[in-house]
Amino acid sequence: MIEVSGQIDDVRRRVGDREMEAGTARSVVISQTYGAPVEDVWDAVTNAERIPRWFMPVSGDLRLGGRYQLQGNAGGTVERCDPPKSFFATWEFAGQTSWIEVRLTPEDGDRTRFELEHITHVDDHWEQFGPGAVGIGWDMGLLGLSLYISAREESPAELGVEWQTSPEALDFTRRLAERWYQADVASGTPEADARARADRTRAAYTGTVE
Image (cartoon, rainbow, N blue to C red; front, top):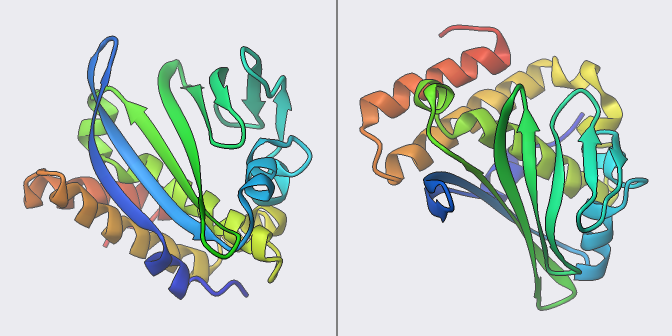
């Protein structure tokens, strides 16, 4: 069993804007502090042998200018890389391109602040599902990284579909949808619109309508 109650509160979530060459895009930012030095966290999030332990299998050339592919998910190109501080890459999925930026900041006591920003232009998918569509997926990733870095227990990536479809995981997802609803409202989205988007996102992830 994975204990997720504290995880929800340990993560910070916000929604905002970011200027891109093609114009203003929406930005979903998620962050958490881990009890490991920055070099170890950097290796955990950039080493193809370690990434599957907390996230999903990855192939390709994980260096500046290289292309990567997550198994059954997105692929893209590493456009900027500044070890062990940050990297920026395209996120190409289902014929659409967005971007991710990972930033690592050392903190006292050999701790590291991990921050991921997912940037996307507003389209029909964003209007329908809002920030939770990508936010919940990244929350799952941060849970896996937390369990992997702390070595407390197996991560969701290692437990596979069995955990992802468990009542515990479904409850976790419902609670995450609520947190992303709150972040959506805090960014200026009218409450009724944010609620409808969060409900659609929760239903898409859990297969249930409440």
